Image (cartoon, rainbow, N blue to C red; front, top):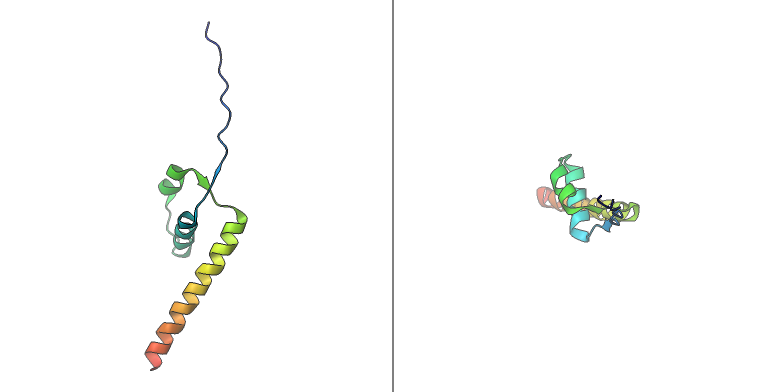
Length: 73
């Protein structure tokens, strides 16, 4: 008889800054990068999403304002 082994679930790993940035980038352009996220196995927390969205918004506003400034000049 074989003893049944119960494996404990592996705790979810927290996503790093580059994974959060990649998630925000893919979210902006509606790119489905499913394979990338499954391979890493990390999860993005709510706080990471909020901070990532705020940083992404700031970068986009900065880029757009620079483009407008350059075009008007």
